[in-house]
Image (cartoon, rainbow over all chains, first blue to last red):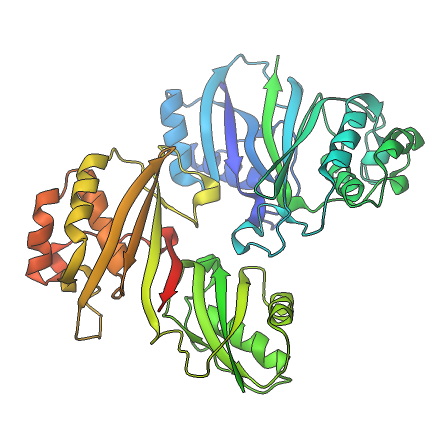
Length: 246
Length: 246
């Protein structure tokens, strides 16, 4: 039995998220179906670094699976890409030691969030960025970003449905770039809670339009109460960009 | 009655082409439905510079329509964009003289065709460019492009289904750029026959991979027979980029 690690890209627009759900088209079920087909009907389970929600994209999701098929990694990539639907692609396949775990061994993640700040919506961007045509103070947003960097209890910035008890996470980097009226938020951290990136982005956009002051961010974090943070930005702007391992 | 000219952008992925067809979702029917709604149920007809096929996109399609509603052009744009679905947007609205005609007054068009030449398919590009992962000789393609510039009978480079009798058209410009393994073909001409851009691109790609020699292009044009040209490139790489008026 050999364990394989794959980097996977997917366009989340037509999926009900990453995780298997009965009768829904999900990324995990497409991956498992493709692998099961390659294993002549024998069920193969796939483990990812974490889930992504419906409409959320991945440039660099990481998964692992075990197989007894003896095939070079380049062949695995070609074989899987030949079976998988057009909105999923395997970027790389490598053999890892048998205890490697895509979720437990991840030491950090990068997410990016794309905002289209142009006045007229772009039909080509509707599933790939959040169209937010309001005037934004980029300096206020940058000032607010700095307040998120560090180790905090992010209870105020995760969904009220979050089940995990320990909500302490560290954000290493959070910056925003502005190019041709497109904002790109880049997050790097040791882990992210449910909806955390989307709630931080929603809050930062409200800082940008003056609804929330940049200086109030430390206070909102300290409240540990979701109701004090801003809106949850929609899924289509969010990309799981990269997963880091030790 | 006032005549309005609009520039329209659409993502062709989810449409059965531009033109109205019974029970199919088309760009024209969405535009006419939106206008009819603004006119409280009174039917409004829209005339475009030309059709686009299923899966083909437009950055700058041009349409005209007539209305008795007295509204400033900026309001027309906002009102239409509020009703139209996310994959169509009105970029501009202007009042034109009553004899302006989106199709008959067009003096030229620009089309672009996008080819993704990377080895691994990009899930985000599947509906927006043609994935062609084979080695291409860009100099041979450039040499072949030059042979298409000028006034010719393009019978060899239009669908056998073409109904128009006069197949003489002038291509003013045809060039190709290569950036990060993406090829962009740019066509400017006084008019294009049915499937003409897609057949020329398909042929140019076969020149690039050595199937067809660049020097044979004048001969293929001279044959006036579709069977001598290359394959028809698929619709998803094609964009009606701009329509020119006198």
